[in-house]
Length: 592
Image 1 (spheres, helix red, strand yellow):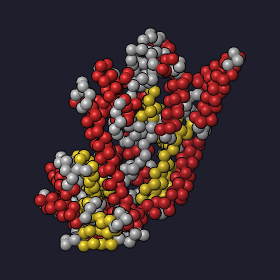
Image 2 (cartoon, helix red, strand yellow):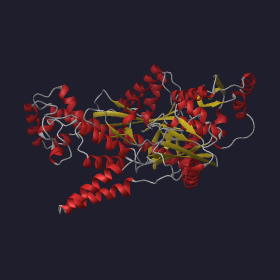
Image 3 (cartoon, helix red, strand yellow):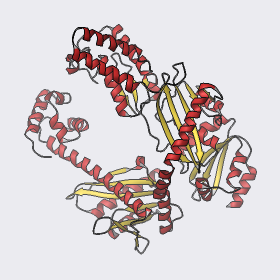
Image 4 (cartoon, one colour):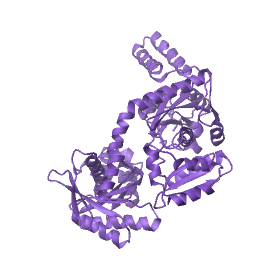
């Protein structure tokens, strides 16, 4: 294998491009880019490496590369390949937090919404933020809705609602409102969301003085509290930049094999929020930081007007990639901001390092210990199964996935079992067959290990199905003691019982996986059972067919929520007579 790599390296050109590292199974485990491919690829196979880089190099069995004509092209290709293959060692944005934005809808009569999964193409010009959390965004929306009588309802009815009667809506449903008034409100709201609070504070101050002069002291006090909220809560740390340009700035710090990154969001001349990320350093500092910044806006972040980056980043490449201004300041106020971000990145890494190491011990290192015990060559992906039913009814199975020691929630799957019998073996057989028939049919990623939450019977059923599909995947089970806690692994053929030290990281790892699959399956079972009960209740009400049943289930989810609905709310889905029948039936219904 080393001879093959040496031979390929000798033929590799020193041109810009992307490379893909593969393991012995031909799976892409890392994607990178380089200005000079030969130099970069050679660096992996000479000298000594530490940390994650050493682990990556130990798994490389082959590599491929694609030559491109420019560094910008290589960056675009790198990002696309990472999205396509989701390599094991490209972990940058996998667990990154997303932040809420406030949307001023582009409707004739606009609304203010808090959104997290943003549609950049459709709503880019109507989104403001990001906000530190949903509560902060909702508080801002509630504040603006108190001051400006915008539309509150999603679908306008035929007559004014409560908001109209408390002066928080102009009754757009049956009153003609001057467009100029709406445009004026929108303009002031946009100023506020961009960081200029002067319009609103002036308006509230004038109204407060007016109410005070009219001896309406309670109302004046309420307005004073509102003003204090704006001045204390919403006015964030000011920065020494006089313009109102929206900009993000990136800082970094590297130590002990990890890179710490800090992102500051500056909106309206103020630091609105910051974002932190710490991850193992595999590539050069410059490549890692450039890749992170390029990937950062692929998720739920809106590009600002300007990005400030440290001087190790090639700002020209990013400027071409984003098509916005990207600067690497070397002096002045902007340089001081980058230094501030760098310092915060250093503080964050120093504060978090011990926690990161403990997390590594309980995930990656525990995963390696499990691999050694089971004598597996690789253990990157584990799929776990659990079953649940109620006296043979509402049979379900759940599957959770752990990748490299951590849950991969996007890969979780639910199985509604077709056979309603109290047959745990039959449930396991159907779930395993459906899952791995689909894996074969659609060419999905195969696990290195399957864990069933059960004893020898469940293991044998799962193995029987896996063998029938000609798949070579190890199946093991988790045995519980009389206190219903994980006690041992059941593995190999013939099956052996492998005791697990209950003080070890491996024990906590297995227990965490077992809890995860159990809670996921139970949650799904409760949901299915609740829907099944609602459906049986709705079958007793005349005029509710499958279509109306579906709409009611979608809106109310549970019987209790449906019971709380008024006749008027039910009439949004049902004809008046049917809504009346359902409301009467539910008021007399005592079941759960």
